Each structure stands twice: as structure tokens, then as C-alpha cells.
Amino acid sequence: AQRVTQPEKLLSVFKGAPVELKCNYSYSGSPELFWYVQYSRQRLQLLLRHISRESIKGFTADLNKGETSFHLKKPFAQEEDSAMYYCALTNSGGSNYKLTFGKGTLLTVNP
Amino acid sequence: DAGVTQSPTHLIKTRGQQVTLRCSPKSGHDTVSWYQQALGQGPQFIFQYYEEEERQRGNFPDRFSGHQFPNYSSELNVNALLLGDSALYLCASSLVGLAGNTIYFGEGSWLTVV
Image (cartoon, rainbow over the protein chains, first blue to last red):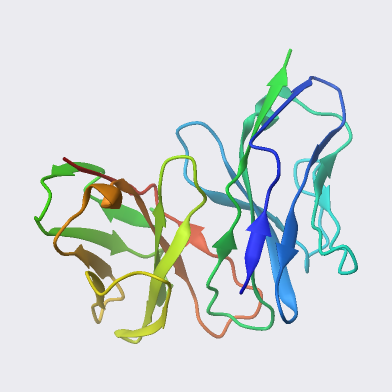
């Protein structure tokens, strides 16, 4: 069975501090990993995906298959980063994605 | 482009009743998926529709059913509502066959069962 674990329900940091949101997964196969973000009163939106290897809004995430992790990192947090973050996975190579989500981490960036 | 639109945004139903939620996918998208998001939880996959057929289904009882229309819009029906069905129901759309495509979510329909 596929599962995504986000161990931190809440994460609070100060502006300018580094931030890391943890994500671990279990999947028997080759998964594709995503980070979705939901800002206050907005819809869920894709932040980044591991196959793109992009940096979006200063966030990066590296897929570590050995540790089955896909942690989200940003060197200097901004107040506008405060949001709910969800890690998700699906089977790679498919275009009909069934996403399995973690329970989410609420990030608060304090001034 | 309005993106994925869902209706209604909020509704209250009584236990045992039936509910229908509606979704219009993003322009050009042909695949619609439905998710249930209970309070404090991540979204959980209910099912996915493509070419008017259910292609994949999550671990939800038969009380949850759906439909996709020729214009790709979709409905989610829940029968014999239980208190535990209270949740945010999200619709997501994508385009099949496009490698690396992005899934877009609607704002959701808040269902409260009393």
C-alpha cells in the first residue's frame, strides 16, 4: 500500500530562518512525488514535483529513494510562505494520477 | 480560464439524505478526479472519470458514485449520508496522455451532515 507521512502537523519559524518540511513515503514501485500548497482561503495548488527539479518560490525538494523521503526546503523563509503544505505521490509514468496525500504541515512564518 | 469550478460551495444535509456535487474541469481537460478532505486530514482519492467511465476508485463504499458527461463535467453523488461524510469535497482535473501534466484543483464543496 502506498502511504505518505508528514510527521509535523505544525511548524513555526521566524522570517529569514531556514525551513524544512519533512515527507516520507512508502510505495512498492517508482513513485512520482509532489508538494502541494494551500494558502489561506485559496485552492490547493501544485508547488513543485520531483521530476521537474525546479525551484519554485525558493523551495526545493530532493527525492531520496534510499531514505524514501522528499523533504521540502527553503533557506530563508518569508511571511508569505505561511500556508498548509501537503506532500503527495502517484505512480510515475502515468498521466492519470491518483494522488495519495499526507496529512499536511501547517507552516507559520513569524515576523 | 476559470479553472476548475465546483458547486455548491457549502451545503448542509441530514443523515440519510442524498447529495449531488458538481464539477466543471479546467478548459481542455478531460479527466476528473474527486477527493474527500476531512478536517485535519489530507485529501483522500475517491474515484476518477475519463471518457465517461470510472477508471480508478479509492477505498470508498458504493454509497459514493459519480458520473462524467460528454462535456467532461462531472457529478459526485453520495447516498444515505452519514455524519462521517462531513468534509470538503475536492474536484481535480487533468489531461490524459500528456506526460508531466499538472492536476488542477477546485475550491471544493463543504458538506455538513447533521
